[in-house]
Length: 255
Image (cartoon, rainbow, N blue to C red; front, top):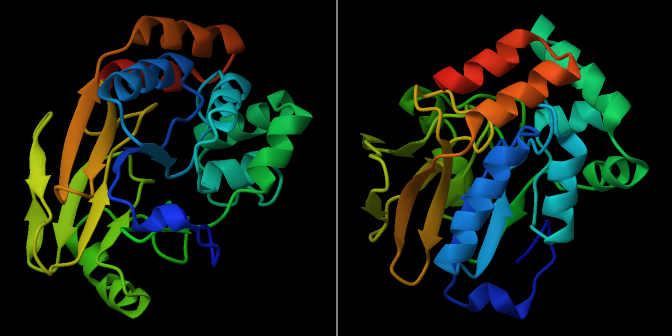
């Protein structure tokens, strides 16, 4: 893959990518998603950022992603947790979790987070956290997406993977496409697409199951996948850590 301007020969290969995002220190959700990914036998996994924040297992999640060598983008919570940015604009709950996370991170994970890139580009896609050039920007719907389509054209790319909103979605110049559970979507043609795989660790679309995507560059197709995990265990970790109770409760609601 290429991070920034770096290239390697494997870019030209046709690969199956697992696309994960917004793990947010939810160990139980991450382990369940990675177990499914391993069972699927994908070629590569890419993470769209926010490995930490909100939940109670920042080091455990960072250790797993780092030790697996998963190419990862720096999310806004990652940037705050590793002291590169201050939590301006964070609400009270997010602020409390960010400051708690700062105190928990090991030196190794702090250094790893500080070195994450702002975007990743391969032969097949561009990957960002929020929006191209701005990890803090939310792309909630078609109106937000449409302004960034020219950026893809200028980059010579027709597929942008993004996270940050914690809500799965597929968007193109001609509208929004419905993504059903475990459904496949054809990317054949010349249209540019923005795809959000949803959140591993804190879904906000009303479905508490962990979400991730599977991009098959040979078939030119994307599949949205949901995975059940022991939410009660993640809930208990948040409570035991003394984090705001709302962060535990929202895991059960998927909101």
